[in-house]
Each structure stands twice: as structure tokens, then as C-alpha cells.
Amino acid sequence: MNAQEIILKQHEDGTTITLHDLHQVLLHMMKDVDYVLRKHHIPYFLNGGSALGAFRHQGFIPWDDDIDIAMMMDDFHRAIPILEKELSDRYIIHCFETRTCYNVLIPGMKIRLKGTRIEEVNELLANKCKDSDGVFIDVFVYSKVNGSKILDLPLRLLNQGLMPIIVFFENLNFNPVWIKRWFKWNAKIYHHLNKHSDYIGFDLTWTFKSAFKPFIFKEKDIFPLKEMEFEKEMLFVPNNIETYLETAIAPTFRELPPLDQQKPKHLKDIEL
Image 1: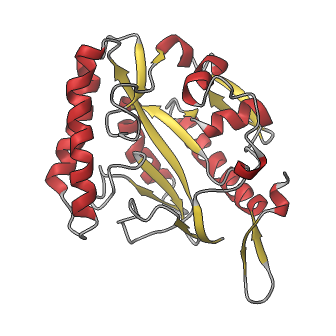
Image 2 (image 1 turned 45 degrees about the vertical axis):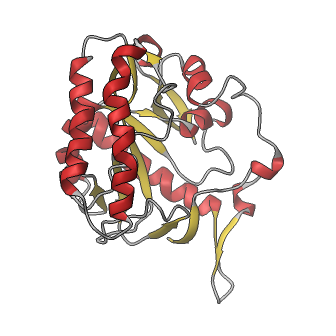
């Protein structure tokens, strides 16, 4: 499937926005972010489907409509003021740490491009920060995790329980700031309790995976990071990327999905 053939939007004058157009914008954004993070020695890596794209397609999955990166929690907090300072001319940085309107149930940060607009399919977790609906790069937060389910479950289950409460209030257009702070604090405490662990995974704010079967990776399979080609650029990926993808995607990650699943899935509307 060719991204140039996938039309995301057709205007009244007949002009179109294709998936290829979006890919070019996202790639330029990623080059800007990569430059700043390298400059300040802040480690990041392509996450999930973006890592799969690098491995299987040397770039975007042809029908993918976003790009995801990840950082360890300590690096994430270090990156916030740096990204805000160095990217402020062209980007708006959305995260709870700087905007309490931010939805804590989605990835920890969205780096949004000014002068663009995107509307996602998922209205339940809609953007609550109205200063920008720009095209974005998702930044996921990883933390140290406990390899023992007995020790892992208490705080993980607590955040799973807080998730529907946050969704309930958010969809009443009430911002439950104190619950969101509690939710974020639990994730931070959990990370520091496990700072000597040999395992890492999504931090506890990512509650869209069963608490009993979370994504857990051996630290040695992620770090040290290595570079891999992505649309003729060199970006960072997990060290043992095949082992990583077996968990993050599926053991069958090398295989293409059925044709009826090879289509963009996140977008409702877009302007570039």
C-alpha cells in the first residue's frame, strides 16, 4: 500500500491531504525533536508501531498515521523545560506537568506543530488543552518496574481504579486536578521504589493494558539504545529490537496484518 494513495481529506476545491503528506510533516517534526534531544544528551527511542516501522519498513508503516517515541521517566522530566524552550517557535508542548488541563490517561506528552490541526477518532480521551489541536508526536513514559507480580500489583491496580474516575469527571467537563496529581504521583513513587530493578515498562499512568499482564522488558533489551534507519534518517530504537517487538507488538510482528486492517485508524479530520 502506497501512502500517497491514501487520502485523509479532500477539500471543496478538489485538493487533498494524503497520508504521505502527513508522513512528511511528522518526519520533519521528528528531525527537530531528535536534534534537540541529541543536543542535550536526553535518550529517547521509537516506541511501538514506530519501532516496528523502523525494523520492518525502514520508516513509517505505510498505513500508519502517527509517530511515537518513549523516554525513561527521569529523562522525560528533564526534557520538558528543554523542549519548551528550544521548540517554542514552532511547537506547543502539552503535558500535565505544565498544563493541568492535560489528559493524564494519554501518553505523557504531545509535541504539537503550530499552524496545523488534527482531530482524533477517540472522543472519550479528547484533547482538553484548547491552545492547540496541532499534529503531534506522542511521547510515552517508561519507568523501572518490579518483576514480581505480588510487589507490582498494588500501585498498578490503584491507578487502574483511578482511570474510570478521571474519565468520568473529564467527560463532565470538570477537571479533577487533585485526582490526576494522585495518579501521576503513584507512577512516580512506583518508579523510585523500583529504581534498582532490571526491568522497565510503561509507567503506571498507561492503564490500557491489563494490570495482571503489563508490558515488561528486560533493561538490557532496551539499553544501550542503537540507531536504525527511518525514512533515510537515523533514529534511536531499543537495543534488542526484535525481542522488544515480540512483547510490544506480538511474536508475529514480522508478518503484515490482513489487508482490511492496513488503513489509518487515529484520524477524524486534519489540516496541514
